[in-house]
Image 1 (cartoon, rainbow, N blue to C red):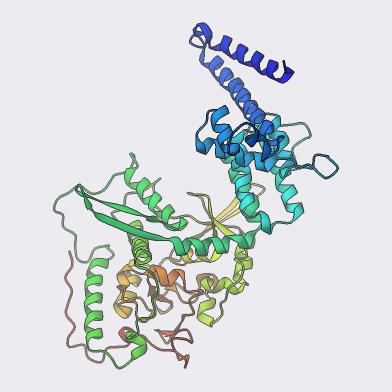
Image 2 (image 1 turned 120 degrees about the vertical axis):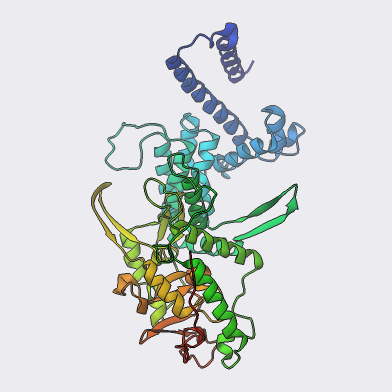
Length: 520
């Protein structure tokens, strides 16, 4: 009998002994952990035996010779796994297969170091796929040296060596999980291919959307895709509401609030602004650039508009005074950016989101680095982080080799009173043709705070979530002229490229029709 088969029979017999006579029932907790560790080592080596057995055979002739259509069917019948399990093994087989040269010699595998880690039992099929997946997605854009470096780094991490150069030869740390390997691979992919995140963000912007289904059994189904920053904000709000240590939402009932309290007054302003805007539009028509009769300014789909509306709801809810706290503060969306990427972004053409839009610069190109949303671990282009920071607070954390050595906070949020004044002045999103009430909008620094722009009503304008997010690439430009906002549109929209003050932002000639608005 084949010696390999005999060895496997011996292993099976030993495992049968372990499983017999309720031997596992009398283990202590410490012994159970040891048994689980040993069983994990056996499991990973068993997976390696399966992968190497298939990988060393002929990819086409081997399954056909035993009456199977392919490797997937062969694995389903012999290993007794489902289609998905067979596909995962088949994928690893392709990545570790060593092709035979014309001279009959085995060539190196695509992932030679990780293959050795697989054979040594330090990584299984799940860990192998988690480690190679992010690199495989950018494989064609990497150099040979980058591919080899990723293979060595991931194999070393799988063995517990880490990626730090300070680790002594032969030393090892705790074994990483499959998620740890995936996180390292994603960081390596972003480091080797930083411009690859920009197309990913473009793809996420195209795929974003929300669909609300019809009423069925008393409920509506909601389906769709959220961009990473919107999903992270939703998760923060959900965590705050469901936090058992929080005060929770207000109890139902009647309560009174003084009209001159500290509330933000957005609801009242929203009604006043929307009404004023509707009245002005009804009697308008003199300026086609402000009324947008061609309706060509907004090319978003209906589901994309619903997504953007939900994003505005999240932003309003997060800053509302009744929102429960999370960890002692409001559910604040956190985006981290490396200082070098931030500095490079400020000098890059894509830096319009940091204020270049006001000076007429802008353009496409690589994102010149990336930002990270800690809640999801997603990498996003720096302009997206700039959009989040424009209406928020920047906290600078100085780190030296992983140790925090300094924290500073720059408060650049428009106050409630400033928001009220800006809403009263502009009424709507500043972009012509967009009639989102100003109370629903984010307040945009026309001259970016990082470039010396003050948090002042003369430097703030309302922009809806979408126009704020896309300001750096949409072709729209904004400036302030003696305290009044002016807009210049793309050349295809306004061939004359004139600066125009939105009609609703113009000073009123007569104040006789103004009425007090009651709140409370």
